Image 1 (cartoon, one colour):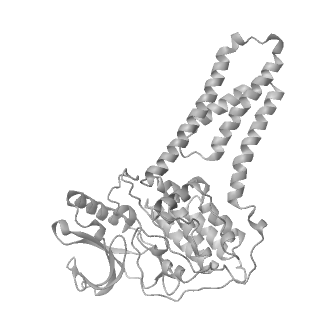
Image 2 (cartoon, one colour):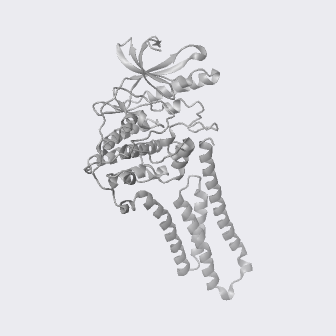
Image 3 (cartoon, one colour):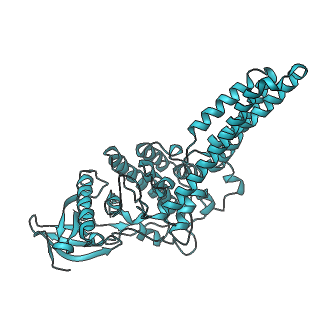
Length: 450
């Protein structure tokens, strides 16, 4: 409450915001005589022994994130608890930043491409520092990004989503289905319970998509719908949603939104460089056009911190729509073509081996099938699975060639052990593929808590 003194030092002055975690206050540091922001994590109040454990973990995680020192990261000055017994509530003391959240700016319209590139590069710089320290953000979204009146970026709540997870064990979700993060911006692997640093890059890709088009890459009515879309659906190209978005932006954003983390930018530093290159690219006259009605905001699962507003930049588009053929060679379409063309080329190669030498085609195809059977996991990509089926399909072609070549003196009774190996190899690959696909689907369903 107003005028309450926290930690015998921080007097609450006025409430700045409220979210799923608790409340944000402007406070007076009576020891140093400066204004600060205090985040009271009411989500972790009470709870008996489990509450004590959760608060202790939160304070431990907060001490780790407090080590981050970067101009684009909100600095944590202090932390502590207020209240007594089961009424204890942890709080964070941070630098007070005068600025405006990107969520507020998006409600008034799409920002310019130049601003999106510049802000994105600064967010990437902050992520690079955190990742180097072994800290993931896990909840990159507009309300966790503040833009100061001078145009500087401040990223909020590093590691806080993880810290307030009352069921976290190591780096995984538990069977409770508690989701660490915000579903509209959540990477597929994070939804499955396996977050990694490139999960933050995926979330930043969703944020950039929203900045330059005015809407999210996926639309869904609820949490399960968002998570399912991130896991199974291909995102549209930004230029197909908002006119005036150059193809270079399509390439960058769709690379960030790849389902497989290995197909995204390898790290935040490389992403920052790519965004700075875009920032130097001339922007089309008119810029991106905002969709009718402005940008709809997705449901939020963690706290937002709105501060005094700053005037946004908005522009209308004067460009005609891009031709339908403009997006026919996007990375997503090229990815689908690659997954189809490469296995077919492999099958043709193995078939040519059968024509050139009947003795080498089957061993090569068998060996390749054994290797791919061994490496299949629930996270294997379609290209890997397709390559395996190409090898499997080449085996009967090679066998037919052998049968034709030795038709006059083919003794099947002497070759039955070899044929049994062939049948078992094909069966093993198909069984392994089915099992890993089912495991992937089960992981998706379990992560959503359905």
